[in-house]
Image 1 (cartoon, rainbow, N blue to C red):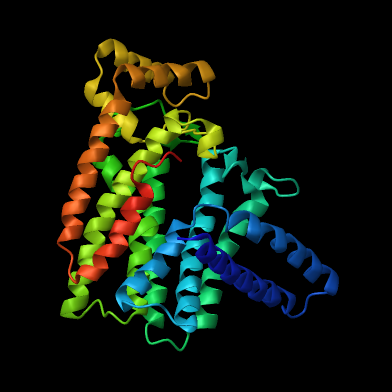
Image 2 (spheres, rainbow, N blue to C red):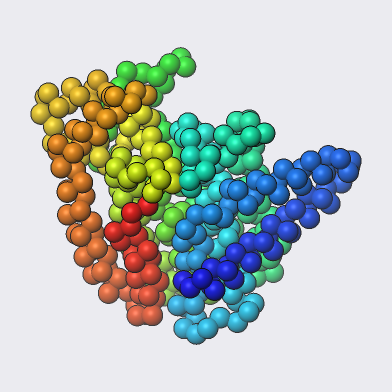
Amino acid sequence: MSSTDMESFLEIYKQIESEIIADIQSLPALSDNVKKQLTDYYSVCLPYTVPGGKMTRGLTVIKGVEVLKQRALTEKEYKDAAILGWQVEWLQAFFLVADDIMDGSITRRGSPCWYKCPNVTQDNAINDALILENMIYQTLRRHFKTHPSYVQLLELFIDTTFQTEVGQHIDTNGTPYADGERAPLDLTRFTLDRYQGCVRYKTCYYSFYLSCALALAYCGYDPESEEGKVLYKKAEDVCMILGEYFQIQDDVLDAFAPPEVLGKIGTDIEDAKCSWLVCKALELVNDEQRMVLEENYGRHDPVGVQKVKDLYKDLKLEELFRAYEDERKETCDELIAMIRPENFQELFKFLLAKIYKREK
């Protein structure tokens, strides 16, 4: 996307933000002082948590509508597609605010996590995550209530939120708790089949499939029709592979990318996450190396974290990932080439280009 397109996209964000702030200002039975406190607070919260990332998820909706229409979009079509794209970004903001609290993360996009900001308590931030989610449905109702695909658009967000929350449960329960205390580390829980299930639900649907499906729904493709079933299924098949590749990239970057490049401080090792790195390591370690993981994985100890990273390097996991990356690229290219109509291929080529060999 050119900078002009990005500027147009950001302009739609500002319009949506203004509408939401106006909704808050019009709440009944609140004093002017309370309304001012709310509007002042969310006038900071929204621009801090919603825009600011790469915005690929949102821009993908616009790209998808353009590809399906096979022409330049009208002003109304562009605005509709951009509004839908921003709702995906809003969903991302909701997930990230909550996820950072769950993981005890420190930074996000190069700045303190929202719950770490001055005048924002953890309790505030939990509620803010819930409000961010609700704003999606407020905006969809405002702009798409009379659209023929309104129910389908709603259901895509409802289904995707549930799928992602299932994935988050799998992700955060790699090391279970009993009576409020973390159970002893159980490395047998870190398997690639568990990892793949987690990634499918936590990442693939909301980061890739949702944007593609929204474009299909907005353009009138019925998922119950013969043509629609094929298109949605092809989109899902490619997006599951793209999403898994993207998450494995994330895991590798979490361990090895400098925080100033990544925009956050990785905590997968400290948080005992079921990451691709630990799953692959457990397939390759000898008894002595396994002991390094048993003694150090899941501990908030910089020395122990470094020992795990050193083990990953000894096992040449970065090199294994590079080989996997090339294989995934080839698989994606083959799947994309089979998609019909051919113009729909452009959407997935766009997505693959966005993530292939990325460094943050």
